[in-house]
Length: 86
Image (tube, rainbow, N blue to C red):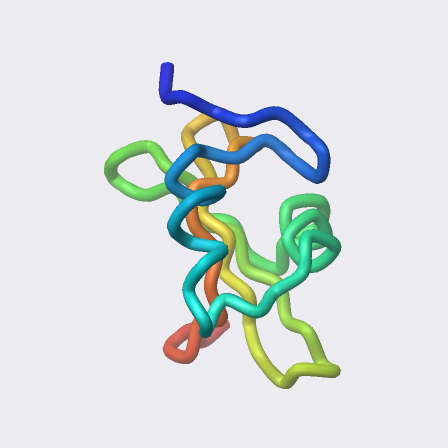
């Protein structure tokens, strides 16, 4: 199993906790990530088993993509997806 860090605010990989959140363009909040996992507008399984979750945030005018491990709860990556079209 991948080294993962427990809540709060949610399960996440060490990569997410140490690399992803330090990138300047990753200005999403934990609340937005949790909301995306709770009620995604779209969910898609990648060939490697990871799961993509998307949710539209009207106040930001953007789609948030959250990528979890195959368990569907451990966040590995998250970013504002400029290319997503529902």
